[in-house]
Image (cartoon, rainbow, N blue to C red; front, side, top):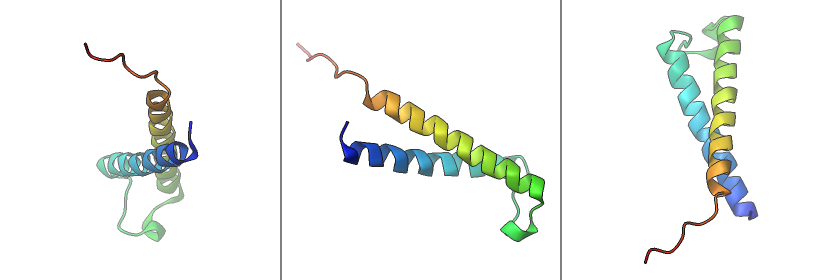
Length: 74
């Protein structure tokens, strides 16, 4: 796998994981307008959500990138 592909996978996975984690944290009422206004538990939950979903997206994108090419259409 090329370096550019690896960097794209990490960048897109991190972006998608951050967006998904923050949206889920917001839907679960764990988000506040400012980081300093959040409790330590809310910060941990949000960080865990972002890290979990970033890893999931990176794993899925890596799996997709490592698939063999499809056969030619006749």
